[in-house]
Length: 508
Image (cartoon, rainbow, N blue to C red; front, side, top):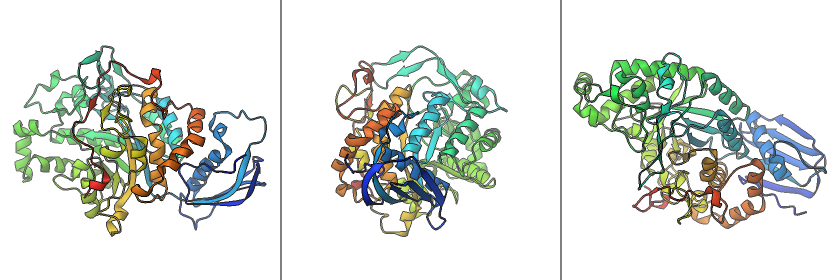
């Protein structure tokens, strides 16, 4: 029996206490407030295991490490071993680098059943990730029940057909697609996640990415420019010109939506999107132009900023914090709002230097819907190629901020998975894993400079132990040798970027 401990994420400090032997199943836990809340100390000896955390979260993360030490079978849903497992006797002192270690799952483009979301929570917890960001609304579907506005799910949760893939030739799945979570479903997900020290972050997108809402309630759109009553839930992908109108009616409508959202999700942050809002309809709209003049604004960018600031103040008055994609910086951002940086690093750098909290999730590094390798066998390739090694070398703190006080404003990192071409749990598994494992180590561990990271050792640890853990968990990951035949999607077009992928080395 080898005494090596293959831990992912890698711990801060590991000491051998001498030899190895059978694990007797005894686990003692305690809390030591002198430790950081998510920190823990794990000791494994002939007497069993002792886990001391700074708070219950630390104890929980220590339990995940103990599962890794006990071997892949500890990740099965029921025990199968007939004999006590032999384990190395070690002491591990560990704590996360970042407080926010997130994963965004887009359930708006393709709806995933509640059980798939609960399973996702389990997978995040096993990898010491602590935020599940649910992208609940978009042009292609509205996924959260709002009792005062029932048509949001009666109409907005369903589309009549769906584009297959993303490219040429244009293909369609002519079956209707949809679904939504009841408020009790979401309360169950929130409670289940809380037991595993995972926070659910809801996203209600505005003022763009809102066609599903406008299809349900046409008065939300720019009816003085287009026939909003003729709009349907969007069936294609891409950036949509149909955005919310900047009216008091819209403000009151979304305040009502958010009142119900706050009653379901107790977390401090609420995500309001704010990305990819085309302003063409506002430029043509007499109503929008009158609002710009009424408010004394310079242009349509400031009009969007006015909407974002409104909801930032509205949330702050209720003890919450707004977070949005980095476009919310355009036109100015309210004090206390946080930024999720997805376009390179520049928005995150600007936000951090302005004193805002920032979660780094640049699409050039950690968008897991992007292809994992070059080659015709990759299913529905989109974006840039992000290999397992690329994700392992992701560095959330840009060089420009390193060593400055602004670096503390980078509160964490997040990997995002959009589901235009990930239509079910199997495709989500394939796109997320094993790259989410590499991301988890980046978000938790104090790794050296990206050029100095030992990817060969990480890859060895994956092969020695962690792929077996994923197998025990039932994860349909991409094998290191390439996709299984049943994971391929021959004939389904993708869409790769024609411009080269920049990296952190080229960031400001």
